[in-house]
Length: 283
Image 1 (cartoon, rainbow, N blue to C red):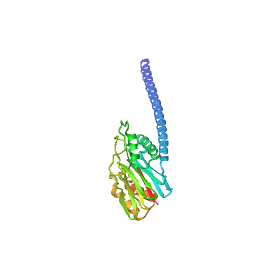
Image 2 (cartoon, one colour):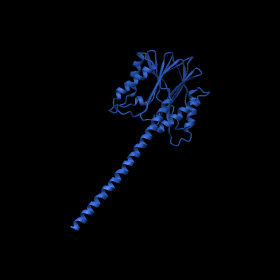
Image 3 (spheres, rainbow, N blue to C red):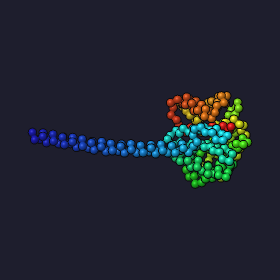
Image 4 (cartoon, rainbow, N blue to C red):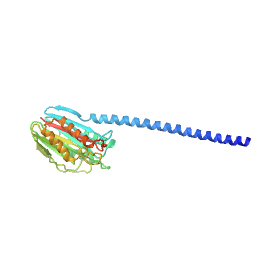
């Protein structure tokens, strides 16, 4: 009887040890999960704050400045986007830019913030887009070990004459909506900003008539995919913009119309890239 009792005690003791070890493991795992969840909440909060700061750097929404009516939106694929756009009036000229940083998330967002701050510092005392982009490339390409880069369209519109000088650094050519026609702005195939030093960027010029709207965008628009992996593409974009010309829509309505068309096309597909649009009407 004592033999059986000893066996029972050993089994019971072993069972208690197993239960105790399992309890210890469960408690340790619960603490680990709580720590992970706390870290996730902190990271999410930090990303949300970073996203709010990024959005505040751009003139989002509808604005009327002197002889210009503008409307822009940036919809990041992640919490922080790698696209940028901006516009401002100085000395009777409208300065405008739109860019797309290679990559996504926080690293792209940091490069975007750097690029945007440098762009406006370079416009002090300088209104030649090619010289501005060249200076920006000199700064961005210096000691660029990781070979990061971004595409950029930069334009300066003289509000008194309608003459717009511009420089395109590997970005999607903008569209011009004017009277009853839609045209793609002729853009030289310059390289993006950043990968190579000592590069010459060309200066181009176009004359805009009053009432013309320039529509700038990033490739997150044309490369938006639906659930079958099909891209929205330039043809659909141009069809919607041509309809906007016929209806003589304002910048806010142009951007919203294109946005609705893209969302209808993509349906429930996950957004794969930042999508940015900016429409500026020269009044």
